[in-house]
Length: 155
Image (cartoon, rainbow, N blue to C red; front, side, top):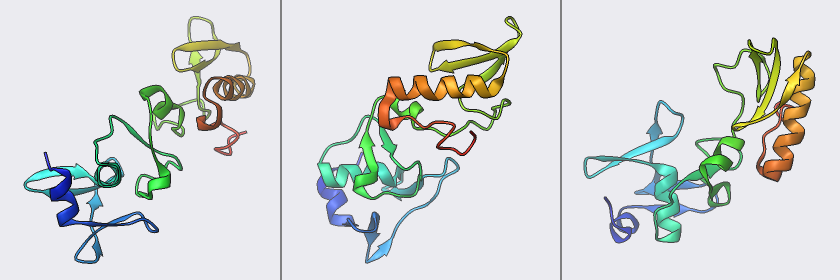
């Protein structure tokens, strides 16, 4: 694992752009997950984690991109968070079949289930009602961090 001194000797960080620079040029190539990655001493690192380490002098446990843009590594866009908070700041999953975040079909109830994390909010005949219920519960539970169906333009 790279040390803080090695990192600051190899790179500079542009606070305004969020770019990690080597010889004045931004580093990082796209990873399949959408983050930028860079190889240092035969080890691959995510650029956002290096930026945090560069600026704070310690490795984060878990980081979140506040705007959900995985290439925006400006320090004010990176925040340490819990697994639960990180999940709250997600958009709609690719595997989603309802078209709404936090809503899926419950075969056993034969209704649309609204769910925030592991907490079931309720069952609804109309999936739009379930989505509205999800939004309210997500805001109640996560506050400003919650990404809602309304924010995603789904409601």
